[in-house]
Amino acid sequence: MDAKEYERLRKEKSYKRIIADEKQGRAIYRMLPYYEDSVLLGDSIAESILDFRLLRKNNVLARRGKCIDMIDEDIEKVFVLCPKIIYMEFGKNDILHFHKDVKAFISVYAEKILKIKDTLPDVKIYVNSIIPMQKEVMEKNGGQAVLDEFNEGLYLMCQHFHLTYIDNQALVDWNDETFEFDGIHPKYPYYSL
Image 1 (cartoon, rainbow, N blue to C red):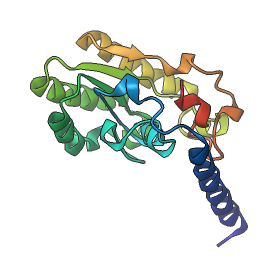
Image 2: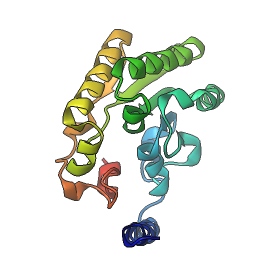
Image 3: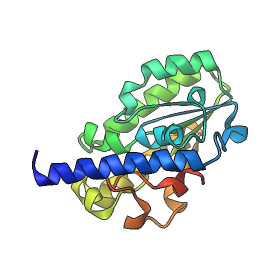
Image 4: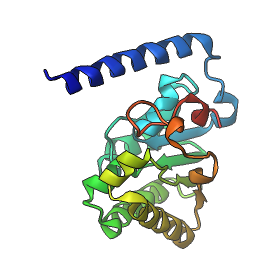
């Protein structure tokens, strides 16, 4: 193990300790009253809501590294839960997974929405924008232009299907201090918005 890898693991371990400490000091399921009849589908950004215990497990179907083309099992669980509202949060992993091909990403996203709507025609679906990353990390993943292109695709898809698009980029001043050590995940205050 080289020094860089050791430092990364040390930071990750510290990060996990910090999260554990924050969990102990925060109200459990603080957001629950607003999301009782809702399900959040997503990746690690959505999963962090569980890490911070803002919602219960049956309200969040998310996993680190998940992409939009990997959610068929989660959709089946959604059918059982039969929520009134579904929030979808995908995209950070998908930018690389789809090799920065926004058309392929949107095509699969639209397919999943149609699958949900076929079984739950009255469910309201809210699609979250892809949030930025630290500048250095963003540049490694195609930069602001790629992020904007993917978000524009999500926005147009939502218009086409008459869904609500949530522009999370407008919630926070996205500077480097907004993010955890990995440069990808926002710190706790973002999630309580």
